[in-house]
Length: 503
Image (cartoon, rainbow, N blue to C red; front, side):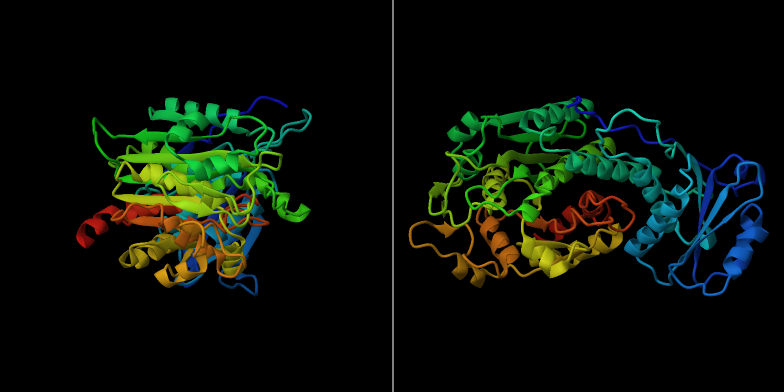
């Protein structure tokens, strides 16, 4: 196979203007995408070049909220006009979804040069949604085809009336999403433990992060028996836990935040082997680790005033003569003994030790990301992800971050009485129940045992990591869900400031 194409392709340049889009500027564009609020007066279309064409587009019968319409401007380039109608009281998700549909229309012509416009102060949110969608569509996921004529891609983006747009934040969030999608989409024979370790080292170098790799020998010394049980079945001894640190300025001491990611590079189910359909896309079972790494990179790029660590558990869950089995009893890094019930519940095993090790640094907040349970998908579909916390007073903040970022989450209970379903006769805890009902809740209860007392913790079960046809503004099946959410939570809702008031 060809070498791993890291780092991902550079993003197109973004040019901002404080003025309207001129007729002359339009003649050099392949497409103009304009969002108009549902309740706005169509007279606002006069701000666009060849406004009469835009008015006729708007005047066609059947115009409703969420509609996307297209026309062609009369110039030598046949510039495509794409008009989107933003629903009244639309939230971030609705704006992103509309922007995604508009980009699909613009992409019909394989546009290279775009202009993005939000009319009537449809809001920096609407313009930001268009930019986020454009940067997502401009990015190419990995492909390994024979050489052929290159497809035209978005190579230049202009933003009209963009004076108040937080461009660095939007670009960092989009780049983080692209990195997470890129990693998650890689085939399992390309992204193995060795190549992932090389990528992590390159990421640390590029972002001036400190990094160390805890290999299997180091993890044995640390008592990480839950992680090592899962790694036993691997053909090679290349599994490990990566620990990266970002410190702004010369800050020292414990991190403000520890990001923890599940990085199962391929999940066969182990001894409890998955059937064909359930195993087919299990190269994406490392999406949580990609989100943790991409979020850390985005925070570093933004020079966020937070001390942040990322801990990612990297292994496969393979079948073989050494693979772990049901009814084994293993000891995790915090001393908890676990009775194995089902080897396909490996994600909570590797996260258990990774949470325990990250917890030793006493962060002010721990957030873990993992494609952990099918029951969360059954509960929510792939449109939202599940969120849990050991600090109930954060619940509204966690939900608000989902609404504001457009990466929606739903809170599930974490009440202690669920522990009765995990009682073991031979160990401290069952790995999982024998029945699947409520497994997303039981998995969260299991993980909570490995979070140190007094450390606020958020668990994100990434049921939205993979959705056929994409989600919101993301047009690929692999969504990269979680990066926008984490940045919103840490930098916009300022969850750490809220934790101070709760202390």
